[in-house]
Image (cartoon, rainbow, N blue to C red; front, top):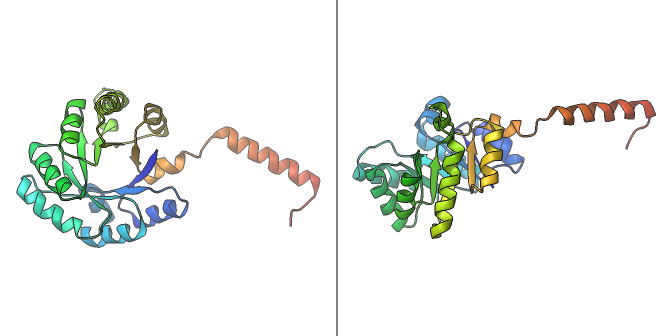
Length: 217
């Protein structure tokens, strides 16, 4: 399973990247707004830091405008994945960029039917938003399972990028299904290491070691 970090916070990306936990980054207009920085500037800095794909999102609604914006974003670095919405115009832009050899991340997927269309349009990644489905009392993990089954049935090469990850349990569940990639906020990825029994065991080891009066080195 590949880990993408869902943020435009360069310091947070660097921290995880230095630990070898970053296979890519996803950004969107909301994350750029939160960073308070220029989209071109911050995206270039991220691309220079991370070897894997960095998703940068267009904001236009019409295909021709998406293509214009996406072309500008793609010029930032070779590892840019142009992010387009799951609309007919977005799929038209997806086909354009895919045919031109660019990575494309089709975002805001909420159904298996939409995921099929994205695969047929040549998407590199499909981003089902599982947390947002959970918010309206649907099971987002079930959507990942449906897409996995359909893609495997027909040999679609589009990678499933589970997005809107809200918890460690989300990561575990989609990993059991076989998602290709997860994208999650740094806080969720960092919390994967937490377990009370690990903390308890470490405390016991340290207490016992102190009683020996020994030192290593």
